[in-house]
Image (cartoon, rainbow, N blue to C red; front, side, top):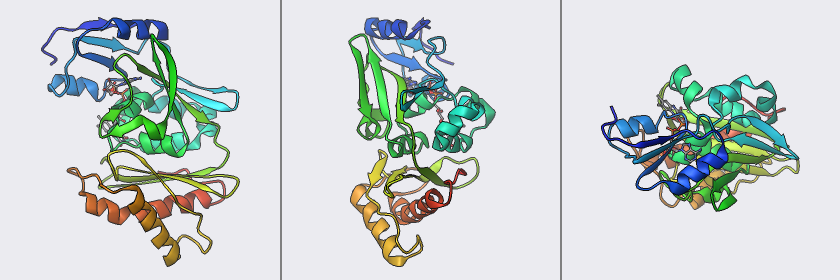
Length: 284
Ligand SMILES: Cc1cc2nc3c(=O)[nH]c(=O)nc-3n(C[C@H](O)[C@H](O)[C@H](O)COP(=O)(O)OP(=O)(O)OC[C@H]3O[C@@H](n4cnc5c(N)ncnc54)[C@H](O)[C@@H]3O)c2cc1C
């Protein structure tokens, strides 16, 4: 039960959302699907004087805008999975959505934008957005700005989002390569310990991001393997790329940082292999 009183707004559009955020005083909570923030409020890990609920603001859905794909912030995992065209546009988004644990309740209510904004180091979303070259569209009464995903995250549970801003959408360059995604988890229902998202581009280069290894998702500098992903020299190259990108690994109850660093290169290699397989690999 949430024990304190708070003001509640459920604006009908984005203009109403940014106006409510501009006027709010005290602790302001943006409510996406509520799958994380409602338990946080209930257990006192977060507090709210004002709640701005996005559920009526029309921010969900995936659409093409020119040569980009715009994912509305309140798009749920279920919406991604049930929109064949959207899933075909960004297969990596479908792959990550299909591997979210917590059952239908979480996939029906949890939003892509809510996960991105929460910035839990162990979430699937952040590293995938970095690998896809996403830009985070932040709206406030002062205007709209877009921040590259790799600059959006500043630490564990911390982003550049200002108090009066809402993450309105995530903008993706239309993927023109194949993708691979792998996550290591303790059990089917667990959160990820390490994730690796790889986009293989038509020019042969790779865009590789790792998640859950550090406080923030990291782009790592990995060349495509010339002698296959099992080549020891290439494996060493990947290990060095991970070490260079992660001076301070992330530890939590699931695993300590040393373990994450030890397994991350193998997870990257698996994702690279999937991305390089004909047509890319779409299983988590
Ligand atoms: C049982 C369980 C299993 C899970 N398993 C996984 C898993 O396997 N992998 C994984 O990655 N995640 C997992 N999750 C987390 C899940 O992905 C998130 O709960 C969900 O995506 C968060 O979205 P939401 O809309 O419910 O966020 P909310 O709970 O509504 O909000 C989360 C935070 O983001 C802020 N926020 C929300 N939307 C916006 C916005 N548009 N702009 C600005 N701020 C915003 C809120 O203020 C809050 O601080 C699991 C969660 C549960 C409860």
